[in-house]
Image 1: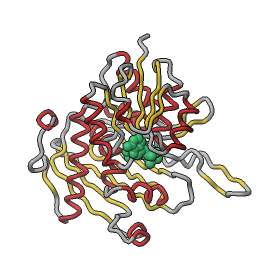
Image 2: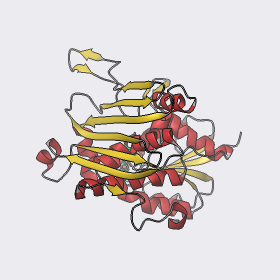
Image 3: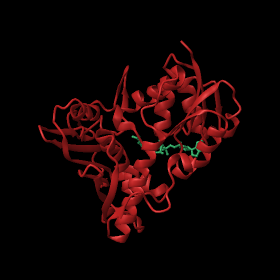
Length: 331
Ligand SMILES: NC(=O)c1ccc[n+]([C@@H]2O[C@H](COP(=O)([O-])OP(=O)(O)OC[C@H]3O[C@@H](n4cnc5c(N)ncnc54)[C@H](O)[C@@H]3O)[C@@H](O)[C@H]2O)c1
């Protein structure tokens, strides 16, 4: 077994999960973390037994034994310079969404794809995915940088549906954004929900909707509903996390296992983020292909950018976007 050194940049919510997952994995020879909040740096260093814990990630670039890095810092504007520096240092880079792949590690989502690929529901005819999170989390996300529900929420499901429909490619996007609670509370033009219709070159169209203004009744509540309709069958999938309900005298009803990345439950992990973290670790250690190609990730990004453009102009947008380069050309 070839063990590798691993780094995590930004050990907040998601980076903390990734750090703990790597620390517990036998393929990780050593863990190195960078975090600008000293108290969180100390906390995660203690939880994971990190070999190096620094505030400036650039100190880690020269650590020879680090082969792979997870970039989990916010705001998202930090992603580009960090990814650039790590790639230039010759390391394997896992970059957190807005370019995302996590739903592929949710077994319910993987089952939908499998049912298309093995012919169970025939030829796909249309699809709908609707995802909502609570406004507390929406406030955290939309407060740090100007990114829409399309970029931050729909990105998961655009990736998922495109993955299901491979090799079809998107050719047209139409989107509308809806304003309400988020705008009222922040005074900024932040949409509550955004709906995107995507037309593929196969003729099929699908709808993805995302929102972040649900009432704060559930900590980090993430609810998703999927409809995948084919010529021979259909799949309706409930990923709303309503299956585990905790009711206490002090706090009333709660949905304790309801976050999108998931959470640790003693020796197990409920949700996709641990499996996704291990997938990347194994890909680097065993020199295996990663599940998401840069081309696919860029295709997802182009759709949510087109969606924002469409919502702004009130008209459909044809892909590829004008002036966009292919991934290879951009690189
Ligand atoms: N896939 C998912 O389900 C999912 C869910 C939530 C968030 N995310 C993504 O994960 C990323 C992290 O989100 P989060 O909710 O964990 O954010 P967070 O704010 O909880 O954590 C980010 C951390 O980065 C740290 N940081 C900021 N600048 C830094 C720097 N220069 N060097 C080192 N650390 C720095 C912050 O102090 C903070 O602790 C985001 O890109 C977000 O979009 C993914």
